[in-house]
Amino acid sequence: VEAWPRVLAVAQDRSQASDVRKAALFWSAPEAGGRAAAAIEDIAVASDEETDVQEAAVFALTQLPDDRGTDALLRLARENRNPEIVRTVYFWLGQSEDPRVYALFEEVLLD
Image 1: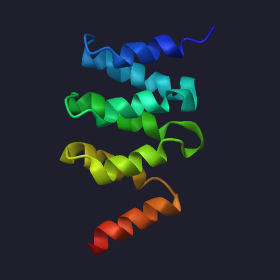
Image 2 (image 1 turned 180 degrees about the vertical axis):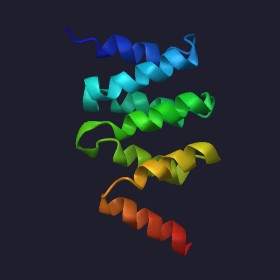
Image 3 (image 1 turned 90 degrees about the horizontal axis):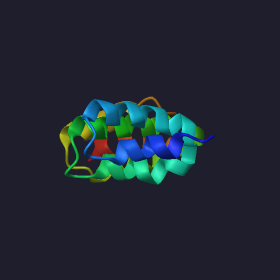
Image 4 (image 1 turned 60 degrees about the horizontal axis):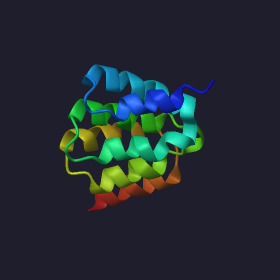
């Protein structure tokens, strides 16, 4: 039985309490893997989303297998306007050894 679709649906349901949604995001990434990447990214980039839920989505992106969330994190670093989310994204990108992350940091530091 695959439970991840139902867990992901809870994460996307804005009528749920933020703590419930954050827990659902936490469990969605390792269970669903790349199949949930787009839905998790949608939560992370939503400008009308609660910041703590967005931060949980950012963390969930870091938990996707094979660095599947790195592309989304790089987009968030460049495009998101919420300083708290950008700070969280940079923290998690700093844990990566992906050369694209080094290029982003170099770009930001030299700008």
